[in-house]
Length: 180
Image (cartoon, rainbow, N blue to C red; front, side, top):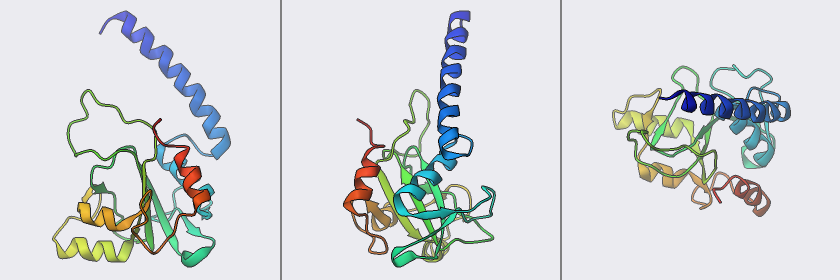
């Protein structure tokens, strides 16, 4: 790598840090995919976030609708690779997962992970864990979830999961984060 490349990377990181500071000022937490994803779903789905960002397994609770009072763990994966981080000790009622484009779990060399939302999934945590255990899947970081399970859990843009209906207003907000 040349000195020119190093200088360009340093300048780009300074720009990114400035953007991250502006986002952090809005969401009141450091700019990470986790914190921003939690903020987005809180705005879109009426989820009251936990006051502490380190509460084990639970990021918040639904405040209205059929899931009112139920707990949720929010994930934002910039690509949907079929993997889901699942908590082992304490289970939320649901996993609400934002994803970017579908992609095979492969080397990231030469690729990008754009900040976008193409799909949203709602998994019943107890049901998902039971299905994974029945298949002998390791539960924890990067648990392998079958494509059929992702399809059944999809609530946006396709409404496959009857547990949570995405309103036209909510869909409009989610489209703001689509790749253009």
